[in-house]
Length: 185
Image (cartoon, rainbow, N blue to C red):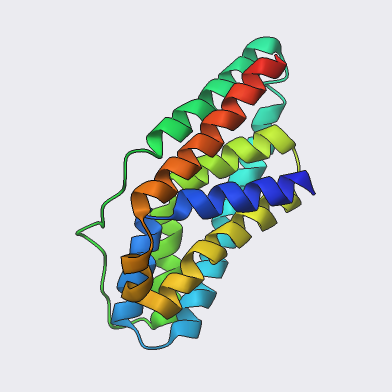
């Protein structure tokens, strides 16, 4: 249960202001079918984060040593510091009218999530908790909590949410998690 709660909270916070959240806003402005966008985000995130959590779980076998635990702690701290650097909307977002909102959202979200902060976080959470299903469900839930309001609230929500505060809170969470991990070693 700890893996689910931690994964949900950290990814929901880390996603605020992330490029995939900006992508959700872009898709909302482009397509009228909001439910297809939400379904596309869900499918892409579930597939991407399941693979990421599995990778983290697989990597966990190599980080059981004290050195591995220190590397894991350092990775959490580095990710927390990375979260302090806000993302910007990609200029080269594909806009292909041949595909509907669901297909475009699924494809774009899956690709945009590769190497993204939340994907790296999912790998780290998978390594930390060694709980593939709970981490995948938690990180997917976190992505949905951060992106569904953007799809349905759009620009109004972005005007009300102080992004720097969200980035700082997410960064503090990851840095704190890393420091706690290092302290346990």
